[in-house]
Amino acid sequence: MEKTYILYADDEPLNRVLMEDLFSDQEGFELGLADDGDSCLELAAQRAPALILLDVNMPRLDGYSACKALREVPATSQVPIIFVSALTSRDDRLAGYEAGGDDYITKPFDGEEVLRKVMLQVAEYQQRQQSQQALSKAEHYAQGLNHVVDFIRGSFGSQSLEDLCDTAFDCLGRFKLEGSILVNCFEEPMSFFSDGRERPLEQEVLLKLNAKGGILSFGQRYSLNVPQVVSLLVRNLPENLEDANLLSDHLALLLDVLAARLMEMREHKEAISSRLEASAIMQASQTTLENLHQQRNEQLSQSRAIMGNLEQDIENLFFTLGLTENQEEAIKRFIRDSSHRLEELFEEEEKIETQFQQVMSRLINSMTP
Image (cartoon, rainbow, N blue to C red; front, side, top):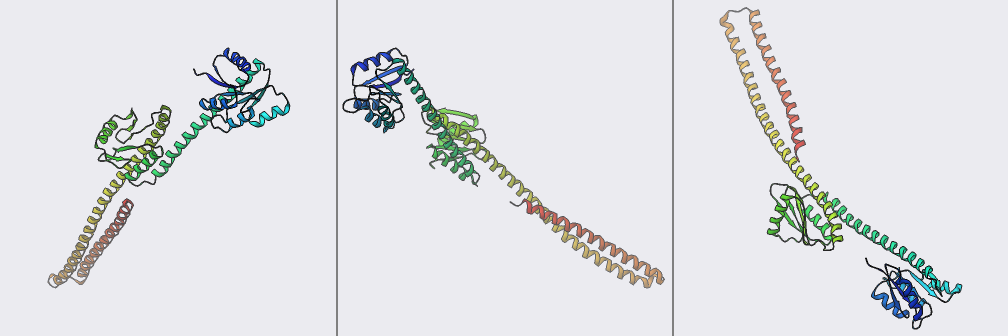
């Protein structure tokens, strides 16, 4: 376990010895010693301490000036600084706080007081560091999620496979990643590459990975696969394990969304195909109806002609049959009534046919993409 590094600056050798003896009995601490303000700055630049103990009156660079200089350096701007000085006045203490100090201990110092204040300041500093690291990770993770959310939004505006894959590659680019996508949920597998350069061997590998499914990592290459739907291959996943794990979460979400959108596209394509097929059947049926309508009109014309000829032929026969006028009138009335009934049947049939054609037209229009 790495020890907590404490830096102590004092121009008096005896004070440095006393402080060194004090911390030698404390496990988990390592004490660095400086004999003035300048050497303190040099040591702090070489290795950032978890806490700095500063004397005030030192040659070359006094403690107040050294404290101000340390606060201007990013690596030590937040490091706790405790003044350890023989100056005990109220103004001296206030000057220490104004210079950027966190606490003030007077000499001759009490060992227990020094240790308690050091441990308290170190614990608070380490807690702040952990909180800042956690916050930084959370911000980094949230930024990655924003990239994926942007992809989700963009995917709904993609009308083709090319557009959808370009949107996914744009998301990868925001993570500074390069890769390729295999789409395997349509008639033929299709591969897309972030740099636009085709790689036949990589496509062959993707086909095999897609058949197996799951996740595969080899070096900086990282593959996620949804069998019979889509595979994503990243070529340059970071070697840092923490960064790689963070990105893998985002990539898994990206692939889930990509797979869902591809399935929607396939279902939409199948629905359009089904509607087109049904529409073709309806149009063929409508053509058949039109042919039947034409045949019916021809039959109607023929029937009218037959009935007209029949009525004329019967009137001609009246001269030879020797029928009475009442009998002749009854026969004529029967022929006229039969002709009217035939006309009515044709009219009813035409109404039904018209209604059926209207239904067919509405069905065809509703199935047209």
